[in-house]
Length: 602
Image (cartoon, rainbow, N blue to C red; front, side, top):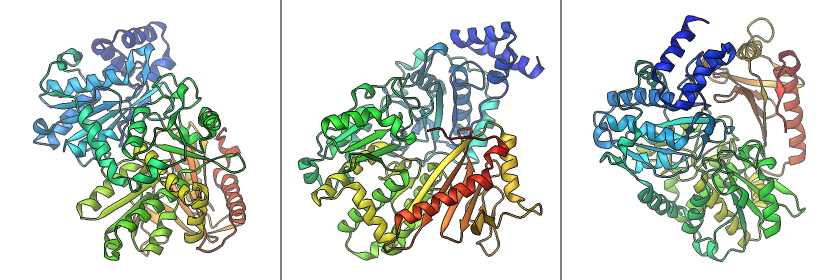
């Protein structure tokens, strides 16, 4: 065994006080299981802007009691440097319902160990006593003016994973260079502090506060400001089915419906209670579409409900499906829901603000791989639209900047079914989105319209925006690099491709290198990142396609869109054209045979 591994495992045996992960490490050493040792002890989990995300188990590459203590010690020291009033203001910590019995890991235990770290240093901790949706953490940071927030969750990842998500004092997720500095601080504070393992000492501590009751109350009070048609909601005949997919969402969505004057939605009984085993789904990710929604459709058919609302396990995302007249269920894409919510929030705002002068301070945001439909609505209606890099950390931070300049940020969304409908949470929130979609559906029903019909009306008025996204799986970083380098050197002379099959390319933006040929100085406007791959191609036919690597999964993703001008286009013809464009991109740019890429499996 190499010395680095020896050092890591020796320290582990000295420091780990969790009997299960300690035993598991001893067993690996005893068995001389090099491959598994390398996996668990070869490299520490990387602390990025999304915090940590990894499987639970023993070792520095896994989420467990010791790595939670080490991470929090580093984060704590960094916060002490950044905030002179940390001991007055404090931090908030919450957790989802994940658990991994073989390693004695669970989200609540991780949250308690993190709280212990801060409290031993004299820092107040607002620790929720029970599970909450992820958006409750950024909400609490802003509401109580705290220095930071930590959410223990792996969102919609497979059941063996957990994560550690961090918010700054502005209520948004951290951006670089905070992540680098926190990583550095973790490395400098690896040895557990004297009381690190004794989480019983926080029980009676005056520094421990439980914000559950007060935050629950104020969150739903704030949410009521986004209810525009309480009388319609009370009377509506539209019925809803809701699933929290074995996660945290159930009681919070019930409360949101109550806040809006609705009868409660029918909950899918097999999925409404938190269960870390996620027994009824292969992946607990409503983005994967119909498979996750099978039980919801069955319940909806039984109760004659027309609309299904599905949250992911930490309730920061939302999927929506509507029963069509044909009897088929239509699952809306994130882009389609972005169009519906954006249109609805603007329409509701306009009714309350007939004076047009306020338009100049009105903003909507979306990420650069999401549909440009908000841009089309903004152009026609006269408000501002901005795009950001992929991920809500960018939209949350940009929204905060705009709000601090006195602007009104009405809505932000990303195609990965994430929506920020109420700027009191500067992150995606599946609880508020669920009830706002319910109100929209109820309002439309009074006009004899369905969500699908309204979506079509939006496309006719502002121009069809047809999107298609998917991914290939690739576990080898070298291969991924080769594939992207090939696109940057397509003709062997350091040039990008000029065509893709029969499709002519009219523009290229490469956010890995910072190149953008649409800018006079050929420099990209959005921030660039050498550590992740991302190239956007604009086509002469009005198509746009982005290829990028995922920050949290072994995937190369692509996002494509065809935008038509307003007026009556033929959506079927546009779909056909987009499908052909996507096929050309897969064949010529991905070259799955050459690079041995696994396609997405349905």
